[in-house]
Image (tube, rainbow, N blue to C red; front, side):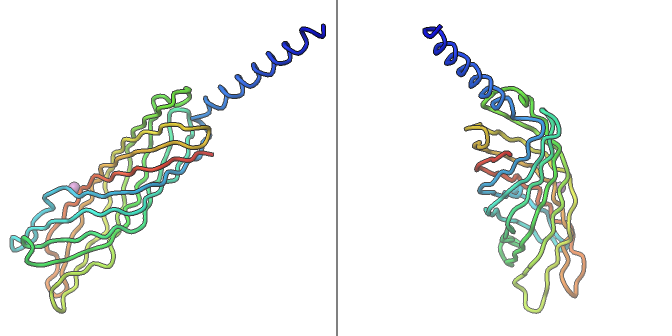
Length: 211
Ligand code: NI
């Protein structure tokens, strides 16, 4: 009795630990709240349109701090909101003849599918579709006495991402969004000048934390 009790206890303890570990490893899924934080880079497409008078528009890229908040309402389905510190983009008009710039915030809400959600896979890819709202502010144009105004934009967004799980809470994360951002530009005293198509890829690399 004395000879078998200790191994039995040990075996029972190890089995309990294994069950607990696998139960926690399986917990990537329903009921998780999560946040992702990282460097976020917004890279507009290369040709951003032509304003009235044949003025070419070229919007540069920018990098800032991005963060998201999300919830998994099903092992394989979740929602995530992308937020960020303001992006600031230099804008070149008429092949660099006129400098301009704008700041913007592009909150994006996506419905996500996690094909390996609910399994103990360490690699958890996801894809999402959703809606973007972009608001522009602090627009500036290098013409004396003239103000630039960029209208707010609503558009569709698509998303791909990957969590590489490190433990029950932390993961490495990389994600990309394609966002349809089109904004009407106007100059004070002149009026509407046409549409600027920014349509960027946004990339974020950093960490995920779920709780
Ligand atoms: Ni567009």
